[in-house]
Image (cartoon, rainbow, N blue to C red; front, side):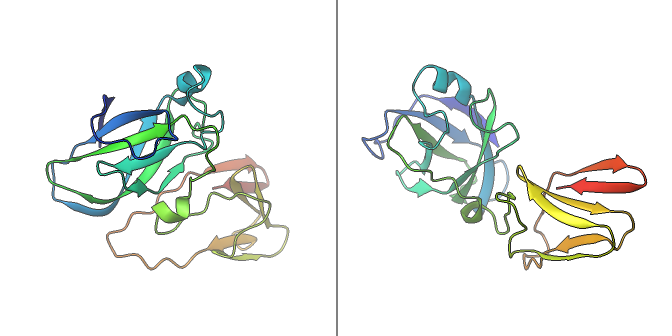
Length: 193
């Protein structure tokens, strides 16, 4: 869990980045390996102050030794340039006493580094206009599947009209999380994930 954002003490990972914030991770349980955590950062204030790019592409997250960690910016919830932007990162290990990470920003020349596939075992943020090859899809009747604005939309009149699934080979203790809503338009329904 995220404890706080505070001062910074470790060596700078790259002089091309102008700013950083410290993130202390607490752990009251057992040591963790390849663990995903969410970090919330007020990016709108930093962008308004000219310290961060408006697209958040200059964000980098490192461990205390300066090792670059993969991360993904959770778009549409609320995304970049918000008071509570959510970043997910994958930490190789978290000790029983916790760990320290650093969030770097302030490099106008940085390329995008956000990549959900490097953070999660299975990931799809539904960019583009069609369902990715990660999914097997079927549709019949008047149903269909469309992708737009970061959502996959399944439209159906009966339960056989539109389906999509993925084969996931995670361990039995894995958790799969998704956001979805059902848009009701009688007599048909649309599910958005």
